Length: 109
Image (cartoon, one colour):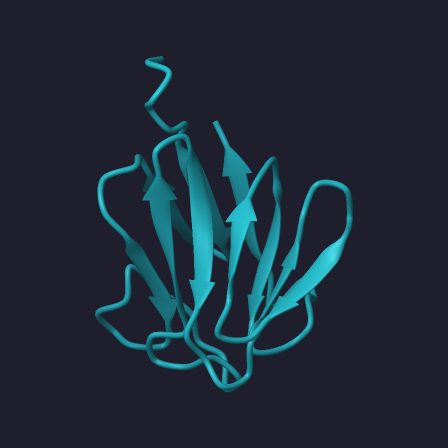
């Protein structure tokens, strides 16, 4: 892999599976045209997006209810209209705390 090339980021939510390769942003939300559509009353239509910044991915929250992110070290960060670098493996929950039902798994490959 080139020093300026990002790894892939894989998102899993229930039966949905999305692989990010560094080509453009992806939208997470309830809208039918979101790249990863989640069915949750606490999530917004375009709740957040993930963008690639050279070698890493950044989650940017656009919502009213915020986003919870748990990283590999088990630290949970709450974002509201902010951004966070996604590193290692972890979980994302849109608009409500992380549970087995709400969590979107992310992992770098």
